Length: 362
Image (tube, rainbow, N blue to C red):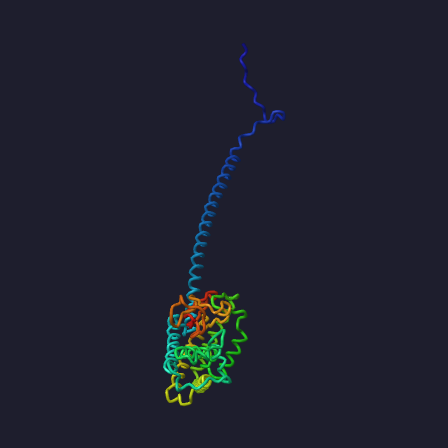
């Protein structure tokens, strides 16, 4: 048996049998190290990304909180500015109290001088008097006001209705408390800027509440600026006072002329009481004109005619008697007081009746 001899390893100088290459330990180690570095970088990047995502979520929450606080602050600021710029904003109850006081003064005057027998102070209404159309308007749908004037219990009602017509047409919304020239200018400017297609009847929504709102905000601010200018100037204030005295005398005379008051009626204090009624009217009108909300008197003659003068419990109250027995409205003794909008400048599509119309029915 032959013993195998030593195997001859190929020599490096043999081109046909090159020596085996040593293992690539350094290269493999480098690749492993590189893979580990990349994994660590990815892990660190993922952690950084998660941190940024969490930070973004926190910032979004903070932004939402700040935005909500800003909205609340903006609302509070608007309310404060409204109160600061318009100090004469009054409550509904205050306006109602003033209106009720005026209603009482008018009714007391009518009862005191025109109830029962044909009063000595009354002669005969004059059809050519300046305020005669206001006397005719007291009995919508008929011309029976003259019959009412001859009736002992209905005479005070038609006189009260006549006084309300005069105040509604010739005093309210006339800005007399700003003086002669300024009141004319304000009326003309308001007429020019007045929103079109305003509701002509109660419970009607204006087609453009935002226009109503803009007009009222302008009117309130302008009125307050005018009053501030008058209050800061003694001579202007005196001119306004002189004008009001003459205007009240003029209205007083025309009232007496329309219903044919006897000149001797002055001895019985009629002129003085009419002046007191006018003073209450002017004070109420001044407060109403400074409100951001639209507050106005309404007879709503349109709805009366459309419903054949039917009594409406929602918008009317009887001067006497049972509403269940009411048939047709014959006399609007006092108009309704209606409010649209709020002192904050909102809800101009919402109407509220502060005082219902007082009517006499048959």
